[in-house]
Image (tube, rainbow, N blue to C red; front, top):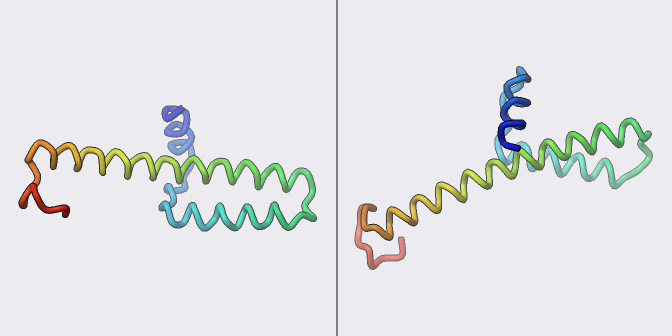
Length: 88
C-alpha cells in the first residue's frame, strides 16, 4: 500500500501536507460531511479527500513511531549520549 501512496504522491504537483495541516483539513472535511446538505457527488468527493488525508496522517504517525523506536533501541544499547539511568 505504501508503494501505491508514493506513486499517487509522485503523480501530483502538490507537496505533501504536514501532519498538522492534514489533521486540520481532515477535521474540516468531517465537519462538512456531518453538517449534511451536500449532494452525493460532493459527499463522495469529500469522503475520498478525507481518506487521503487520513492516510497522510497515518504515514506521519508511522514515521514518528519508527523514529521513537529507533531512538529507544539506541538508548537501550547505550549509544545515546547522557546517563543511561536518567529518564530523558
